[in-house]
Image 1 (cartoon, helix red, strand yellow):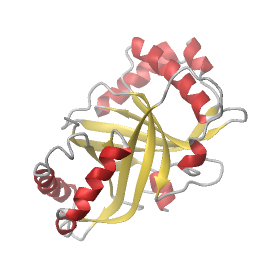
Image 2 (image 1 turned 135 degrees about the vertical axis):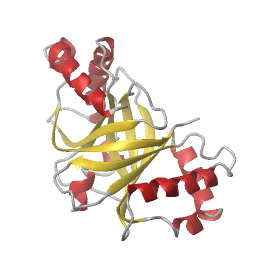
Image 3 (image 1 turned 60 degrees about the vertical axis):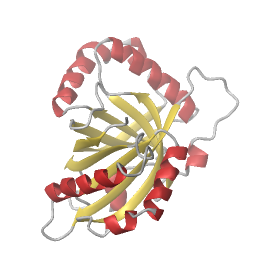
Image 4 (image 1 turned 180 degrees about the vertical axis):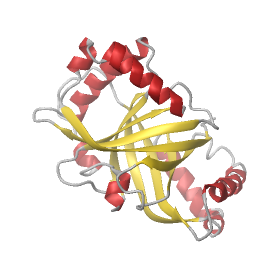
Length: 253
């Protein structure tokens, strides 16, 4: 059931990100993300979690610059194939494992456990992931009401993650020239989750506001769908998409 909620990646990151000796067009921009998936405790809801975030933010501000590069988003399932699986995903992103694990050590040794005791959510799964950034949304400011869609994706025979990344990057750059503002990532888990056989990565598409998703859909069908970069975007297929609305709680400094 949790697999259906997460719709994350298959295989291990060492397999998914292993590459051959082929020369590629782009060097992937790689970052890390932590997904904390859970359900609200009795008589608790999103308002309580937002309040708890205030305590968390106050604590992080006392830890020097350790958390300056971390972003935080709270995602609630909206169009989803298993609405009962979980209530919320708390998502932390980091620019690299260096910052991520410095933050984890600080959390474990400087009071994070005590703060966690008052968390109004019981987590059922915690997933560590690598993410290849294809494009960024129009804004990543705190306070945004985001819209995000995760879909399971499978590589076609003869294609690798790197080959698909180059094709997707070409498409995203052309799309941006036509007004597109969708953020896109290819995600694989490092620990905490494995997808069903045949799924190689998860595609994340997200916008800085809910309404932007509609604007970008219009741009795609009117300007991008029949374009050469779109026709060249091949080598994988995606299905089992689930969408979330989310609050951007923290932007990187």
